[in-house]
Every structure is written in structure tokens, then in C-alpha cells.
Length: 350
Ligand code: NAD
Ligand code: DAU
Image (cartoon, rainbow, N blue to C red):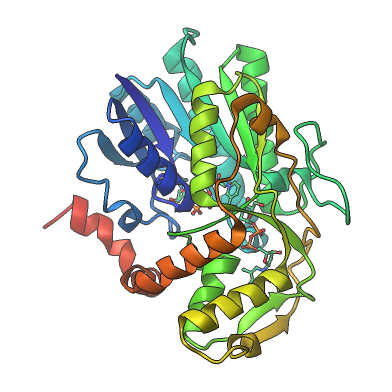
């Protein structure tokens, strides 16, 4: 019997990790800690919320007292830390929120783990989930490896880089048994429609314009979210303490090429004439400090832990489009803000 804390479990990737752990490990108790910001949606977890090994706790990681209370309530064996402010455009508008949650919140968790575990670290794991954006931007060639120097460019990536440094510092200074992973762009079900793929699916469906930043010639490496969750499972259980693992899809796409592919899939799914959705493309002002290219060398996790992506991008994209088109109610609740009342209905009924 193990009790594992997953932070940010009501978010996009977190909800997939919670679902995987709750269903694959019925012998574990999974505590999902989430503040339920705009990005936290318990409707993402409707299918697991009745399971006996699942518990939800509404906690803000910026509040050290709340975090300590939670660590006193449960005897935790491990932590998988995903809670974060995650959207680059929002970080450009309000950097401080990113520093508070991503840096201060992470340090509050590190302090609680260090103090509660009292140097008895046998079999304990503090797993910090991070991003490839900490490495900055690549030119036309090359890949990020685990040895690439940090060079974050946005307030979001600077806050994630800072949190990574703190996690490593707690390993080096206090021997806290940590592991870190840095992953590329995720896509799939339950992603908040502010990120490129779900935003564009929703806009195409509603015949709204598709705002392409700059010339659309930026490159990202895309990974199906369930493959990321599977990698997290491997790293949590078998990753070497103190180590970092890069996770990626071996799947680079220029934004404009990806958008054109998405337009064509949507035309087909919506029985629209080929070329209809592409007409919605509108080139808009670029994101300031926009990173040109991300590409991940994920050979370490492949060689050491045997993980590799399971899906071809075309298949994953098709599955993703199908999910958004057949989960109209979820999308409507998210875009109308109705999901925000779900916690009250579910956990604080009158
Ligand atoms: P998300 O924005 O969908 O979810 C974040 C979750 O954290 C939400 O449920 C939110 O309510 C919660 N949260 C935010 N502030 C909190 C606070 N102060 N206290 C408690 N909970 C709080 O994010 P995501 O896309 O699922 O990303 C999850 C993690 O993975 C993040 O750490 C992110 O940096 C990292 N990551 C994301 C991607 C990606 O492509 N989305 C890629 C690599 C790494
Ligand atoms: O690389 C991992 C990162 O991927 C994660 O750490 C972040 O949490 C996650 O948000 C994502 O960051 P990006 O900035 O790459 O994702 P986003 O979906 O915002 O944008 C993807 C690309 O599409 C990027 O080059 C900007 C561009 N874009 C995005 C939006 C929302 C547009 O051209 N138009 C848009 O409207």
C-alpha cells in the first residue's frame, strides 16, 4: 500500500496521470492536490472520482500552511508534482503569478517533503515534472539533451527553470530523492482551449479565425499526452534518483504545417469541402520572445527505461479531433466557464 500525491491533477496532463495511476495501481491511494485555477477542471476526472483509491484535496501550493497540513494528514510515499501556471502567453501578461506558483509553490512542497520525511528517504520519491522550454530555443539543427545548458526565454520557462534548480539543489544539499523530466509539447484530450491544438479545433468548429503568430514558421515537437503519462509512470518507478530525463515525440512540426494538417482533418470530420478551414488562417502579431524551435533527444529514457512514444502523430491528431468533436459538453462548459461550479456541485452540495 502506497500513498502518492499528484499535484495539478485536475489539469490537462495531471488528469491523465491521475487516471493512469488510479486505474493501473488499485493498491495505491492517489491524493490529487489542486487549487482549481481556471486550468483545473474536475470534470476531467469524472470517470475516476468514485474510485475507492482516489481522493481530491483543494489546496494552493503557494500557501505553505495548507501544504504542511496536507503532509500531516497523509503519510506520503511519493510526490508527482505537475501543478503549475503553464501558458506562455499568460506569463507574458502576469509573470508574478508564475513565480508564485511555479517557484514558491515548488519550494513549499520541497520543504514539506524534506521536513515530513525527516531524512528518512528510503523508498521516497519527489518527482518534478518540467518542460523542454527551460533549454531555450534551437536553430535549424540539433536537439536538447539532458546536458544542454538552461537558457529560458519567457517568464514561464524562467519560472520552470528556477523550480528545476531548486529541486536539484534540495537533492545536492539535503539528499532529497528527486527525479526531474523535461517534456516537449503535449496534445490530446482535456487540454484547455488556450493552447494551439484545442484552440484551433474549437475555432474551426465555430468558423472563427485561426490566429497564427508571426509567419507560423516556429517548430515544436509534439507528444500524445497519454504517452507522456506512460513516461511519467516509468520514471516515477524506475528513474535514477537525482537524474533528469528528457521526453519527446521524435515528431517535429512547423506550426503552419501542423495547422494545415489539422484544417484538412477537420474538413473531413465536419464534412466540409477540402480547403474550407484553411481560409480561417489569419497571421497575427508574433508572441514576444517566441522560441524558434524545440527538439528533444529522448534517447536516454528509451535506452534506460525502454519508453518510446506509442502513436504516430497523424493517428494521435485524428483521435484528438474525434475526442473534442464528441465531447461537446466538456468543451461548452470549459469555454463558458461552467466547469468552475463543478467543485461546488460535487464536493460542497447545499
Ligand atoms: P495545466 O495548466 O493544464 O494544469 C495545471 C494544473 O495546476 C491545474 O489543474 C491548476 O488548477 C493547478 N494549479 C495551478 N496553480 C496551482 C497552485 N498554486 N496550487 C495548486 N494547484 C495549482 O498544465 P499542464 O499543461 O497539464 O502541465 C502540467 C505540468 O507539466 C506543468 O508543470 C507544465 O509546466 C508541465 N509541462 C506541460 C507541457 C504541455 O505541453 N502542456 C509540456 C511539458 C511540461
Ligand atoms: O514545450 C513544452 C511547452 O509546450 C509546455 O511547457 C507549455 O506548458 C505548453 O503550453 C507548450 O508551450 P507552447 O508555447 O509551445 O504551446 P502553445 O500551444 O501556446 O503554442 C504552440 C505554438 O503555436 C507556439 O509556437 C505558439 C503558436 N501559437 C499558439 C497559439 C495559442 C500560435 O501561432 N497561435 C496561437 O493562438
